[in-house]
Length: 561
Image (tube, rainbow, N blue to C red):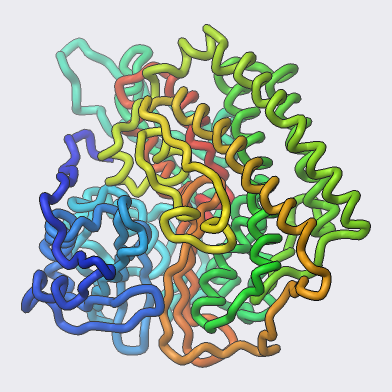
C-alpha cells in the first residue's frame, strides 16, 4: 500500500458511448482509435483487445471519458499461444454498462502495463494474477506474491507448472517498511504483527502493522493462509452437477444460497437456460434469509470487537441467526452448506405441510422489528459504541470506488449501488423494497446499513411468502428442462454477478466445448473490500483499526478462495 495520495477519478461532464438504448460500443471503439486491436463478443459485454503497452492510456480514457469508474474484476488466463488479462469494467451509476478490456501478452514473456494507477483495486488483483498465472505487470507498485509464500517456485495456474517440484518455505525476519521514513531524527516506529490467529482478525489474517506511538502509520493485510484452490476445483467439475456444492464454501457465514446464485446466474446465461418464475420467487426468498443470517453475525462479531459485548448483543444476534437457519434447514435440508439451487431452478419445492413453513417464517418476521430495535438500543444508541465508531474508519466515496468496494461497505459511504436493483435478476424487480445508503462513510454508517438492510430483506421475504401462499398448485414448476450434460459453445466468455451479503460476488467463465469450464474465476467482494483497510486505518489509533476491520465483515474463506 503506497502512502502517496491516489490519482482518483473525476466525474466526466458527458460520458462517451452512452445512448438511450444503452452502450454504443462503436463510439467507445472510436474513443480508443488505433489502440484497439480487435473486438470480441462476450456473453455479458463486448471485449476490446488492446496492446499490452497501452493499458493505462486506454483505461484512463474509459474511466474519465466514458464513465467506467468500477473495475470489478481482473481475470488472468493462459492459452496455447498467449497469456491474457481481462479487466472487467462497469459503472457504479449503471452496472449494466459493461466492457471487458482484453490484454494479450506473449507466451515467452507474459507482461503488460499495470492498471493500478487507474484503479487502485488492480493492485491486489494483478498480484494474484502474477502469483497464480505468472503474468508480470509493468509499473505495479508492489508486484509480489499475495496468496502463496514469497519463496514459492512456479505459478500453479500456468501450463508449465511442475507440481512435483519440492517447495521449501523459509522463515525470514520481518522488515519494517517505514524503517527509513521518519518525520524527525528522534522519531521511532514499531513493527507489530497482529494475527494471523487472533479473534479480532475474523479468520486467518495477518496484519503487518507499523505504529508511531499509538497511531497506525502503515498496515499491510497479509492473506493466503487459507487458500483452498476453489477456482481450480471448479475448473475440474462439470457445469451441471459438480460445481454447485462449492459456492457454499466461499462465504460460509450462512450466505450459501447467495453464493450458489452467483454461479447459477453465470452458467444459466452462458447456456441460455430459463428459470421458472415460481423457482425465482423461492430463490429470492431463500437468498434474503441468507442475507439476514449473514448480517446478524456481522453485527454480533462487530459488537464483540468494539464493545467486548458477548453476553447481550452477540448472543441476541446468534439467537436470531439460529431462527433463520432453522427455516433454511427446513427448506434445504442443511444448516450451512445448502446446495439447494440447481441450474434452471431449485432442488425441490417448499417443505410440507406448507402452512407450517409459512407460519414459522411469518413468526420470525413478526418478531424481527422488535429485535432490530433491541440492537439499536444496545449498539447504535450506546454512547460508548458511538465514541468507538463515529468518525473512525472513514472511507470517502471516491476512495471506495477506486478500490472496487461494494455491498454495505460502499453503501455506508453513500454509494447507491445494489445489483438487485441496478442489474435485476431473480424476482427483485417485481417487489417493493429500498436500497439502503448512509453518508457517514465511517464504521457507524456501515453498522446502520446492515441493520437497515435486514429490515428490507424482511420486506422482500414477506412479499415472497405472500406470493408462494397463493401460487396455483399446478403451476409450481421448480426446474426448467436442462440437459443432463451441458456443453456451452467453445470460447464463450461471461462475467455475471449477484449482490451477495458482503457485496458484488461475480463469476467469470470461459468454455472450451467440453462439460467443464476452461477458466473459472471468482470475484470476491471481501477480497476487494479488504484492500480499503489501510485507507480507513492509517493515522487512526490501534483500536480504531480493529473496529474498521470488523466493519468490513470479511470472511477469509472468500478472500483467499
